[in-house]
Length: 93
Image (spheres, helix red, strand yellow):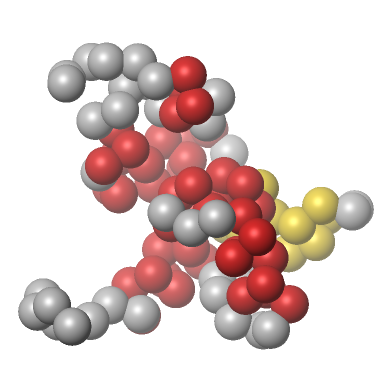
């Protein structure tokens, strides 16, 4: 699977499907380009549907976000901090 391109992930700046599995690679790529991600990009990064992320934002849950004009943006450091704070143990269930 290494090196295989996926058009859906290429649109987000990821060059192959293996990159999407590695959070550190995704975060590094986001910081290298622009540290602010759109709702769609953030949802993809977290493995959520954009509608789920929008609902979380409306309920005051989820990563910290900012409004620039009419669009909402998430800083990669805020996304990672939120994700790390919500970590659970390695067990199932």
